[in-house]
Length: 284
Image 1 (cartoon, rainbow, N blue to C red):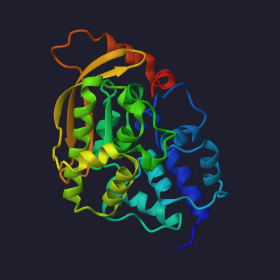
Image 2: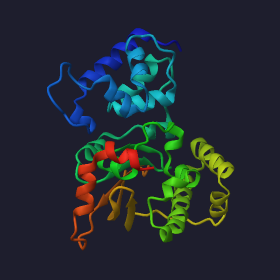
Image 3: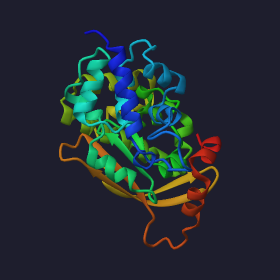
Image 4: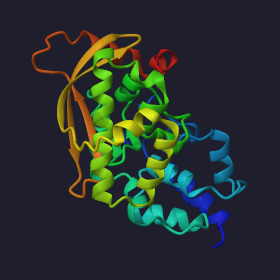
């Protein structure tokens, strides 16, 4: 298939200009000269450089990869049909099967964008982070500069030691076991399809700890729990963790709400005031 550079450039530009900042979870800010998102904002949401977005919109870029197109489709809140059109313009076949499950479902995106006072993350059943709101970014850190295959929460847990530092020491071992148990449940449900096998191969190669836990054959899906997060700038914050998932169980919305028996709103309020920009400089 051949890439339609002119069509791709026009479609990306028009899609960006149609999307309001508030619909992408960004502040509207002062009056804007142009409609929709700025190129820099789209670049941040998709995890690419603003220069690359500019070259795409000017028809001067090399052929984007399917992974990059998926990131752009999510950032632009494209529908399934629009996502497929984007891939075809770029000279790729539209994603099928499990890959399509990485495209954010509109209903979950709608919920995520309106949870401004609650840290929330949207993931696939394998743990790939698809999106998070500003408060979750302030809590857990930005993944804008992390390569898309490495945004998986299980991968990061077992390959990035700093990720565990966000949790009390006594809770890290059971959390690691739970990550593996949840991944096994998803892998079995998927029939160990190619994306699942690829992730498992990476994990077993990179982490002896994961390999050992995987052999225990534990299976679990954590839907509710009490969770403590230790933020480097705010300190310990306690949450009630709630998991909402689609009927097909291929995408999950993770919510971190203040427990009703915790009367001090100070840490969460401070996190809101700090915002993701400041938290990024101190968080993992």
